[in-house]
Amino acid sequence: MAGPISRLAAFSDTFGQMLDDIDRVLVTREQIAQRIQELARQITDDHTTAEGETEITLVPILTGAMVLAADLMRHMPVRMKIGLMTVSSYPGKSLRTQGSNVLGSQLGDIHGRHILLLDDILDSGGTLRKVVPLLKEMGPASVKVCVLLRKDRSVAKETPCDYVGFDIPDEFVVGYGLDFDDYYRNLPEIVTLKKAVTATAASLNG
Ligand code: 5GP
Ligand code: MG
Image 1 (tube, rainbow, N blue to C red):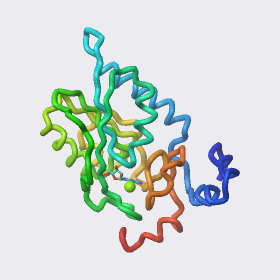
Image 2: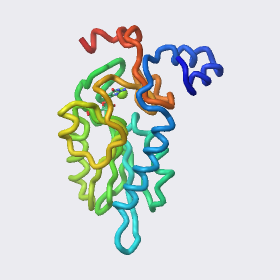
Image 3: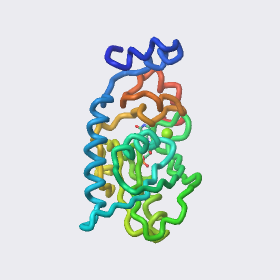
Image 4: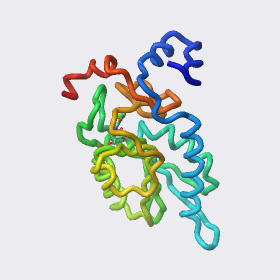
C-alpha cells in the first residue's frame, strides 16, 4: 500500500507483512493528531471552572484506549490523575462484540472527582452501558465520555457520549490501539483489513 506508513515497512519484514494486511486507510495519523488537539482543548475548557480550576481523572478502557489516552493527555494542561479499567468485548479474533466483560480496574478513590472515560470506539454501546453506571456508583462529581471513533449505527449514535473524534462507516477497523487478535494496535492510522486476513476468524463471527 502507498502512503506514509508504508515507509515503516523498511524496518522489518514482519511489520512489512502487517502492512500488507491493510485494505484501506480510513483515518490518517495527521487527521488523528489534529482532532486530538481539538478534543483536548474542548475537554479542558469544559472542565475549567470560572475560577480557572481544572482537575480530572482520566480513565482509559484498556487495552484499546491506551494510545488515545497517551496522546490526548499530553495536550491537556490539567491537574490530572489516571485510573485504569480493563474491559474485553472483542476477545481474540472477534469481529463483533461477544458481550462486555470488566476484567479488572485500578481506579483509586474517585469519589468527588471529575471522570473522563476514554474508549477507542463506540459500536454496540454495550461497553459504555456497563462501565458508566459502575463508575457512577462510586460517587464521582461527574462522568463524561470521549471516544475516538463512532460507527455509523443507530445503536452507537443513541448511546450517550460527550466527545467523538470521528464518525466512521460500520466496518471492522484496527490501528491506533485497536486490535485484531491483539495485533495491529501499533499501526499509527485507522485502517480496515483485507478479507483474507479476517476470514481466519469465521467460526467466531459467522
Ligand atoms: P461496544 O461495546 O460499543 O460494542 O464496542 C466497544 C468495544 O468493542 C471497543 O472498546 C473495542 O474494543 C471493540 N470494538 C468495537 N468495534 C471494533 C472494531 O471495529 N475494531 C476493533 N478492533 N475493536 C472494536
Ligand atoms: Mg479488541
